[in-house]
Image 1: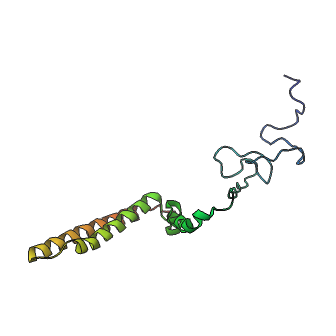
Image 2 (image 1 turned 90 degrees about the vertical axis):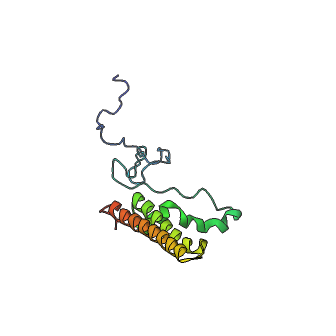
Image 3 (image 1 turned 30 degrees about the vertical axis):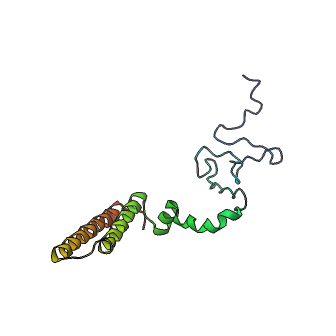
Length: 147
């Protein structure tokens, strides 16, 4: 075992010192200290530097360029834009769906008599009440740290 250790002065909690020329460029290496990131880590465990994001693989194909605006509709983009937690965002979407359903009730059903009018208004009231419940649930599910 003594033959395996050539430099016993190296402390176990510090990364081994190597010359930058001889160190191969690792894809998951820290730019600050050169140590390899742990799996799933956002910061370096040695120096605390943040992990750089990977560059795009290449240019966007021509046939995908018209669909580039759809990236704004991704769940993560909407969540970041509104600043909501995932549960709160789902409740927000449910509330918006209920508001749209309340508006659609008037477009789908036609009024033939007073009883039809009252039934349509009751359905609208139920959809709007469901929207209020969903919005209140979204407010209650919002984390205290997010604004």
